Image (tube, rainbow, N blue to C red; front, top):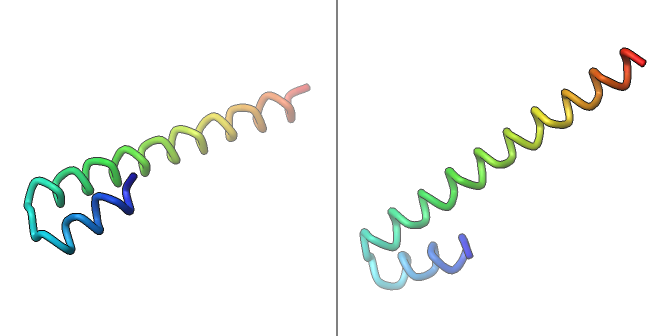
Length: 49
């Protein structure tokens, strides 16, 4: 979906498309950080066992 919004922005120059692209990009970045935090917690729990 993020690729589609970027392509739409490139072809139209629509600021709304760009803002949607940035929002999706930030959401993707936030979810990656959350996933990393969960992995760190699991590693910590396993090392305590």
